[in-house]
Structure formats: structure tokens, C-alpha cells
Image (cartoon, rainbow over all chains, first blue to last red; front, side):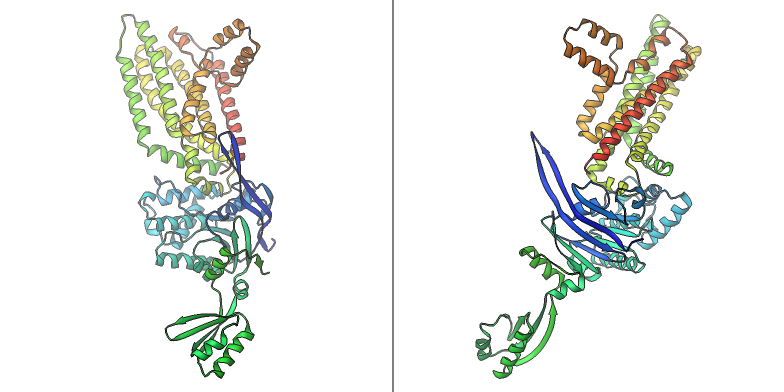
Length: 315
Length: 256
């Protein structure tokens, strides 16, 4: 099997919205090129309406693309056998509330063509994994949102998938549950599963993802390994007990300054300016408190990308 | 495929059997058949005719109501709530999904026909014991007719809103019941080529439910040939399958 689990080539989706006497076209995804390799935890980010859910629907073969191609595990995602190797957790838990948890899981096990003995074993295992084994006989309408999210994860794991597609897996969960779900995802990645994760929680993505892709206005504007993307925005932070002379001297340099109480924090992306700031501090007898090499958090990077027109990627 | 259909049917049955509407319709139907049986006419033949006409048409109409109640929202609500994403993200062919849904509705309808039919057969066994088999045949034909109606309900649930679905299903039922003789009269009397074409098209496309109505023969205590039942049931099954295939074509192209 190839190392590439998901591959999208110029994948485009245009929705046609039929209104009275006219049809409106909406570009939901514009020439998406994407590659997710085996074992990656790929964080897929973007504001609402950027095209994340459309991409997931295309990867799952739920909707046909307008142009381009998408391959999942080397095959067309509409290939029924391919779907047997995918686990999917939707953003909102859409489950029939009149069913009990063991009934809904047995329904999904049936869709995976599991015989009843194997299905029972898998249901026991996934309920144990998501911490719901004590609640299996309860009706779904009795569950909180967090519990339903666990049910969602349980059904996504039923077939022991090679690829897990998780749409907002920690949405609506309390902090403890968020940590628990995050730990489960990490464990699954350690088992060698490939995870494609869409999330609004940037800190969560930064914590667990190996790769990231950022969508904006239906286009993938930034992608690459997490470490490499954050390294692009490396900078230095110099903490100084500044005096007037120091502040006058650094005026005109390409640095940013923030005053925190009696401390001045000078930031610059360029090493030469860092050296220059340090030499000015020594010259003006301003006390250097600390020098930190920093890099943007994913949140800062995301904010910058949403404001600007950046189109950068790393390989 | 069998395991998948079994899973879909099981889930559908759990839903239907936990729905109070199912029991309400069964209860109302039992009460209706009881009311029909207690009405007596001076002539026993009139009583038998009344019983056959009203009970069979009542069983069909309540069956349509049950099929609409349980089927009209079946796919559209899953699309609306997006729970269908979870099912179709599994290795499930869309035709299998539709077959599972239709079989679910048919099993519920079978339970309904069985319960109400049993009540009717008990009454018939006292009034005209020789007609029991013919009445069972009539009930089976109603079941097959309801199968066609259910296939239409599923097809419409992929295309239109539940309210329009109800309206269209009732329209199909109404047009399907128009007598073939009456259609032929329209064709003979019509001079407009367009109206002839439309009438022929309606005759060709819509199901002919007239074949399923054997009330006249029952009232006259006539024996109906087994082959007649076989042919009509085959027609019903083929028609249902045809509608299912159209539904599959629609479903495959549907944006979810």
C-alpha cells in the first residue's frame, strides 16, 4: 500500500443553490491540493464556511466533486471497500435518540458487515476505550453532548480503521473530557493510524497534530509539517529594564516594543537587529533581563493568515 | 449486503415499534374493523358486501396513513439531521440503504396487515367460512399495493419536502385507483391529441391499482384463480423494484 493515505488534486466543489427561477453557484472548495501520509495527524483548520466540512464530505465520498480528483487509501472515496477502512466522527452527534448505545453501535457494526460475535467483541472494546462500558444500556436521549461525542468516537473506532476522520472531536466537551479525547487520539496515532482532524481549537491542533493545513475562502493557503510552519515565524524577544537613552537609540529600527510595567519587551525577527538591540542596551547601560528565541503559536499564525493574503507552505 | 440490510431493518423496526403512532393506528384500525362488523343490514349479502368493501378499503387507507407516518420523514429527516452521513460513510451502497429502508416499512406494514387481517378473518370465518382464503388473498394484494405506495413515499422523500410528499403520494394513490375502463372511455371520447397523449402517459407511468381490487369477486363469492394472485403480485413486486431503481438513481446524484 502506498504511503499516501489521502491525496487531493485540484479538488473543486461548487454547490448549486436553486432559488426561485434562478440557480446560484457557490464555490465551496477551490483547487485543493492535499497529501496526508500514513501515520500523520493532520490538522485541518479554517474559519466557518472555509470549506472544511465540504473537504471531509468529498474525502468520505458523500458528495461528488465538481472538478479535480481525490483518492483515499489509493482509491476513489466512493469505493465501498475503501469506506470499510475509514472511521468518521461528525462535528455534531447526529444519532437516533430512540436507540440505546449498544443498539446504535450494533447497527453500525452491521453496516461494517461484522457478524454478531465479532460485533459484540468490537462494541465491548470501543466502549471500554471511550469509557462508556457502564452506560451501554442507556438511551441516547439520556446522554449529554460530551457523552454523545464519545459515542461518536466509539462508532468511528468500531472497524479498527486505518484512517480516522474527526470533525471537531472535542467540540462541546468539558476540559477533562477534552484531555481524555485528546489522549485517545494520541494513542490511536501511536498505533499507527492516520488521523485527519478538523478543529477550531488551535491549541489542541498544535498539541497533537504533526501536520497542518489552513483553509481560507475555499482555498488552502498554508500547509506543511507543524514544526516547519511555526519555525517560519521565528523571532527574538528581549526583556530590558530600559532607560530613556536606550529607547531613543532603538527608534527607527525594525523592532516592535511593548511596555509591561517597568520592563520593555523588544521583539525582532532578524538576528542582526537582536544583536544591535543588545549592543545598544550595553552601550546605554540598560539592564538586559532575558533574551528568548520565540516562535509563533499556531493561534498567532492563524490570526495573521486570516488577516493577510499570505500563501506560503513548507514541504 | 444481507448483514447490512438486516441492520437497517432492525434499526427501522426499533424506531417504528417505539413510535406511539404505530400503536395508535393499529388500535384505530382494530376499532374501525369492529365497527364495520357490528353494522348489520336486512339482507345478509348486503351485510357481507358492506363488510368487504369497508373493511378492505379501510385497511388500505389506514395502511397508507401508517406508511406515510413512518416513511415520509424516514430519509429526509436523516438528511436534514445529517445522521445519514454516518451511515453512508460506512461501506454501504446507497441501493442497499434504500432496500433496507423499504423492507423496514414493509415489515411494519406486514405486522399491521397481519393484526388487522386476523381480526377480519375471525369475522369472515363466522359469516362466510368458504371465503377465508380469498380474503387472505385480498389482504396480500393490499400489502403488495402498500409496498408500491411505500416505494413512492421513499422516492418522494428524496425529492420533495414531507408535506409535498404526502400530497404526491395521495395523488399517485388516487390516479392509480382510476379504473382502466374509465381511462379507455376518456381516450375514446377525446379528440385532442395532447389530452390523448397525457392520458396514455398517465396510464403507462402510474401503477394500476385496479388489478389489486378484488372486492367485486369476493362479494359474489367467486373463486379467484391462483395465477391471478401470482400475476398481480409479480406486477406489484416488479413495479416496486422499478421505483426503487429510480430512487437509487436519484439518491446517487443527490447532494447530501
